[in-house]
Image (cartoon, rainbow, N blue to C red; front, side):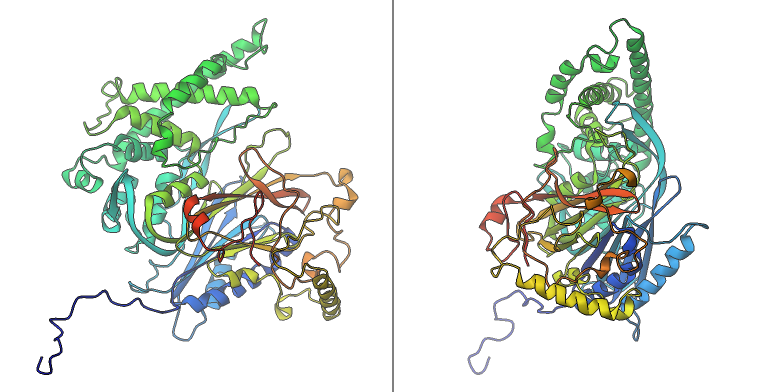
Length: 634
């Protein structure tokens, strides 16, 4: 330039500065466990939306699962694009209420009833248009009716039922790359081409978050032969293929969803024959003179040998899961009551591994199944059967986050895990329950537990999880000004008894009151190293006549006690050390117990760090980790 300054063309190229803006997407969610508090669900959701909308409010959505008389769960999703003069939270909740009321069956008591999950999202379109298709929650494969298999942990037998199969995700962040093959990450653009071909469903929208819904359909496989075969083909059969997924798709060498469904039908038929043979052997064993001495069935007779063989067959599976913790699958446990049933289920699984390998190998041509040379049939068979037994919601979330590159504040839910009958060993009572998975990796996520209310709130904004701390008197039909004043005095007295230092643990006193009389607390996920949290609830009916009076919930005939919301409102989410946790064999720990409408319930908590070394090196600005307990921050 004339004055000796470099021109724009001579200036060194620099990356544009980051956009310092508070506008971004946000997750919210709520788990209602006590029926008495169903009337304040919309109030709490409105409060959470009001806080989260500060991130951006171009559009929003909310999904819940409605219960069918058969025990089936079906998703009910509402999405809206905000107008110029509308308030997003009010607009969304008004339409959501109309939708669930319209879908409510005639004669049912209410469209909202415990236990029930609510999963929501607010979106700020940072790099794409504001469209209804881009709104969360996202679903890739439309709902379908499929045959679902489950195992009874008491007898070890397998039963099937026809269920609605669909999954939803809410995501804050970006999906940049994903590893469908080890060491070969593909960009989102290629993933958007592969997923429709493998899943047999068109891409719902061009936004990257929609791919996470497709990945959920690909990874949530337990009890589903169709989904298991797709998983086994992608992550087993093509694991060591010379060409990548995108190249296989372009060359026409990638099997379509229709071809994979044909393989799934053949495996399902082989599975049915195996179960018939096992039932026949079990009946013969019962009539034998020494029946029941050692084993419950013919398939379980070789259980110890089968266990060793399974260990050899599945030895490579740990590597393929990239370090993910493996679930037992189908609820099989190793306790004394269900020990032999567990052996029986594992023996059947071992036999199915052998039959699947033979069907995809030497018997493929006989059955008219055509597999390309690039497919390793032995690995595909092993991964397919393993996915059928172990591909639950938590395992799916762990695998997706370990294989993905980007930033994620994520919530996963699925119709097969949102409620209904669940396996429960060691008890003859019918047990119902469900689960939801909350994840963080590069984006914040927090979970607040309110034991006295039987409510759990989670979301991207920690402030939004405080919505249940002080309910709005104008929106609470049971609020009494006199009781409110008394509760403020009681809360103040309680605050004066709290430890003065936040680092001092606040121990739980299980001897005082009934289950649920505990201070609320918040758990902040490790968004630096990455963390996956499983929330699981289990309920069973209880007899009021045999219940401990000290543990019984308040009687409903007292108008001042029938609503737990009238308890003293907490002034803060306490940093707390849970000193009397109940541990479970699968690593879960008890968050709190509750009673609701003649049911006894437990909410359990399980956390998995995706990168332990990164979490250890992080500054203490994240969640306070308490060994053996739920790490808390106030």
